[in-house]
Amino acid sequence: MTLLSVKGLHASLGGKPVLNGVSFSVGEGEFVGLIGPNGAGKSTLLRAALGLVGARGEVAIAGQDAAAMTARERARRIAYLPQEREIGWPVSVEMVVSLGRAPHRPAFAGLDAADRARIEEAMGRMELEEFRRRPATELSGGEKARVLIARALAQDAPLLLADEPTAGLDPSHQITLMRLFAELAREGRGVVASLHDLSLAARWCTRLILLDRGTIVADGPPREVLTRERLRSVYGVEAHLAEAEGGMLVVPLDMAAPELLVRGKP
Amino acid sequence: MSDTARYRLLLILLAAGAMILFVLSLTVGPAAIGFGDSIAALFDRKEAGPLALIMQEIRLPRAILGLMIGATLGLSGAVLQGYLRNPLAEPALLGISATASLGAVLAIYTGFSLVFPLGLPLAALAGAVVAVIVVQAMAGMRGGALTIILAGVALSSLAAAMTSLALNLSPNPFAALEIMFWMLGSLTDRSMTHVWLAAPFMVVGWAMLANVGRSLDTLTLGRDAAASMGVDLRRVQLLAVLGTAASVGAATAVAGAIGFVGLVVPHLLRPFVGARPSRLLPASALGGASVLLAADILVRVIAPGKDLKLGVLTAIVGAPFFLWLVYRTRRNLL
Image (cartoon, rainbow over all chains, first blue to last red):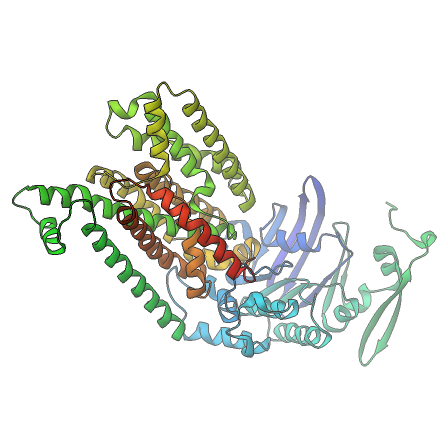
């Protein structure tokens, strides 16, 4: 089943067009890596799909028109991890994670056993048990990121949109996270994560969407999307592509020579 | 589970504190009446002796207003700090206190308050309505926290300037003095009419403010995260602004602007509720009521017969206390 489908999405920020007719859809079991240079429109695409920024175009969530859904209905189908890791008050880690259950609870009801099980599971997956009682604001950047990821997991939605979830994580937690996302996809959920580490994206994602200046320039399996020519034309870098330990390696080496750049051509 | 138990205990303690202070407020005053006599006179329905008159017409409205206004300031301060995610937010921030004051000042200045007994509080409420319309129009339906803060600051400055103008052009020194004294904030000589005028607005305001508690929890993680968790941000903004306007507007209308309670009380209680915004709301309402009742008792005890103004005391005690609080908790502040 299609979890999210976007057709001809246009969005502008401050009068400047950021998305120019983006179309794609995400199905169950897919772990999509959203890649592209800074300012390509990755975050705006995720936010527009959620209705957080004004956009023209069609967005359908689980086959339904997103515009006709309430915020709560959307929240039960899509969980979102924003790029900004904001925790406004020194609340406990457990409380932050439990916020993920908000869309599932009636207005003034407390947490029930099923909610608690989800919260425990999410904390376990992000290895947060020992932090449970600590104020979330006192944790390191990477630990905070894990708390917020656990919060999004506790929401238990069929689709997860994560904006740069690996930023600030150490290699072991980056891999733990990619493993977890791949596992969620195997369970039949969908994950869309914007990523900057191309090797990480290539090794773990089932599909990559390459965004450049507001349009999708490539969409498909990692090996088809990540070519030397594309990295040169989109990122402006020369890269070394290799196979290692059963996966792809993408190592950016140097800036591409100016005469080889096709950037800026119509 | 122990968290919830601790929270319940805190609410019980705060409620008990507010009740004790309410009773104390009824039994303290220039007329030296014994505790037993005063409580008996309060419930005296048959003879309208001077004792019953003092208790029922002077001290009871004063104590009720102290309770309600304190709860209003504590609750709205906690909501605004949670909604704007700004530890400096307080009930006066939206410009409601300043415009309500301006309305009252204009009523005194024009003599409207002399012609019509409820002219002053009604003019103050009209001022609060103006503030809401301006702040909502400025912030828009999609507006952010910063727009609301800036609009409130601008509005407060404008209202303060207009108040100064009214003082400047005041026809006689007595009107100027009345304006000055009114603006200091006090609960002296209020009647049950004031209670009945303010109560409906406050209750409606409280209901609106109490409704945003859950959403404030989610807003801890920022606007985008809250929206993605099913929070309707426009609804939260509308409830927070209208609820503050109704309750704080009514409080200012009957008692003048009373500062620092709405700023200090949420800070004081935040560590005791695990910083959770939704839990801070009832705690802060009860705490605000206790603090205001205590302050109103103090003005009668410290300087009997001097008519020390409540707003002056809360500022004199509140400001240094806030400094100390900032010093002590600076590590945990944003």
